[in-house]
Image (cartoon, rainbow, N blue to C red; front, side, top):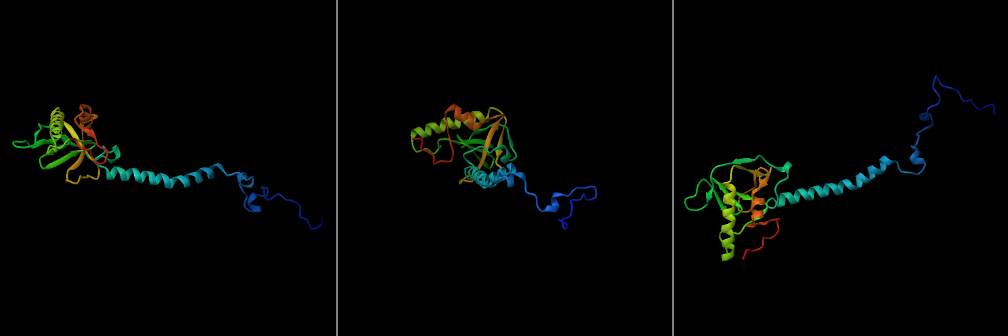
Length: 196
């Protein structure tokens, strides 16, 4: 017993845990995972899936620009439009309506997103009559007062080179008004059905 050194107080401090090596958290030596570590492990497992979901959503928005109004964070600078619209064709004005989903502003051609209208170059009499109704409805909407055309930030175009935009007056879009009138149908990026 003579070779044992008595426990002594160090200069105003007792022996510190560092003196004995690394001190493990209570959760570890009792076999329980620490709460922060559990959430960290869950986040590590979920973050890649969340990133994939976000990328898939952005890809759908990019690929199907013609089908959806852009979300607010993807909207470009709105273009103010006012003045009279006429029907495109002989004797048309600088601003005209091509059909139920297309406008011309001088040299610019704008395709409204989210709707599908019957084509003016119809395959049958029913489509020709529907095209006439849709064109007349868009002409009435365009002449009802000033509105704005809202592009997407990346300025997409369709396969015909038409700019894809949303026509909006206040909180109501032209697409909503035409859908409510029953002269067009919603377009969500799938293959378009015929009108005949």
